[in-house]
Image (cartoon, one colour):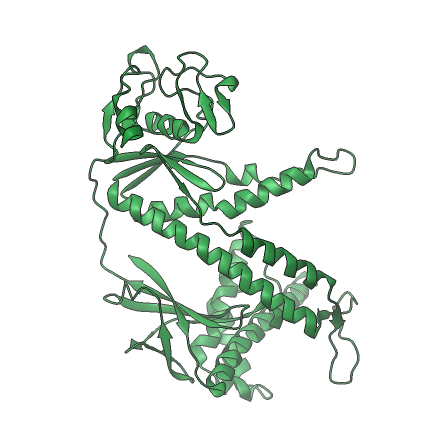
Amino acid sequence: MIRSSVYRLHPGTLRRAQKLAQIAGANRYVWNWAIGQNRDAMKAYKEGKGEKPLATFFSLGLEFTKLRSSEGHEWLRELPYAEVRYALKRYADAIKEARKGKRGFPKRKYREDGDSFAIPQDVRIRGGRLCVPKVGWVPISRRGGDPWAYGEAKQAVVVKRPNGKWYTSVFWEIPDVEPEDNGKVIGLDMGKWNVATTEHKQIFMPEASELEAKLRRHQRKMNRRRQVPLLDADGAPRRTRQGDVIKVNSRRREKERRIVAKLSRRIANIRDNWRHQLSHDLAERFGTIYLEGLNIKGMMKSAKGTVEQPGKHVKAKSGLNREIAASGWGRLRWMLEYKAYQVEAVNPAYTSQRCHCCGHVADANRKKERFKCVSCGYVGNADINAAFNILALGTGAAGQGGAFASVRAGPSGGVLSSDPNDLSMDMQLSHG
């Protein structure tokens, strides 16, 4: 079983930081070199002057060995061999995925895209330090301790984030420990800013409105700053193969970009930490978790339309898409799937309009956050009602006895009653 931990990397000295940047720059250089090699070989193949390029890690590795020994590339020999060559492994995998139609073909990387490289093997961590080849032992730290230190470090990825700080993700191989089924179940209804459960709880995402307002303000400032042409050694603007001038951020724009990146990372960390804590708590207390099988990609499809058939309410739909992306439904589900014993997705159709007591379905049942059944008169929170419907669909309680049976869950999540007239549990929870 593979688990990962993210650590802050502390270079400590300018020499170490420069060496890390050099290794990352070499990875970028080799990636772009592979793109050029593949492009030229493919062009020659189409002209009937050569064979079709394989673009495998083995074939590219042989070419890299020649490149490293060639004149003008002596600087590559001063950097770690395996760490720089591994960029070709990632390139070969990207080509393979592109040929299968799963993603686009690899594009050139620039310094503005960020610095990163992998330590593919022989990862050594000792005494709170990571050994980076050709750099030395670099201190690392992690808030909350080191949860997987008893395992074996198999690989590490070193990244310089846009805020200027270095981090490393270490991948640990640990003994397989399958989660145990304690027989308890729970239903979840995922909203834009909260998760409702069959414990009659609504768990809200931490507030980040002040940070978001600050982020938008600096994004506007960044957009007002200029980009300047990238000059070569002679002072002439550098151009792409298509003849377009290559532009980079000005000093003031780069300053704002760093602030925007720092704020974006802070907001993302706050929300990710909330998802981790929520998923860990649910996985510890419940064996099976039922949630909606949402088609998130389809829900976030743009409403812009075409010139001939322009979309409607485009601005409102764009705002909704941003909120769905910020909610991180897919990421929360992914966390639950690898932490919990079992996660089951149910068809979300009509879970918001159906009364979990009598099974009556009507649009009039739900009025924003309030649910009032027009058939049996049940009144409650709309999201919690939906969570009970999701749990009932998952456990197969729907349709029992000729009606949509209610699945009432106490603090343990166990099924306590399926009688629509039994409101004792609701009374206990409302007064508890």
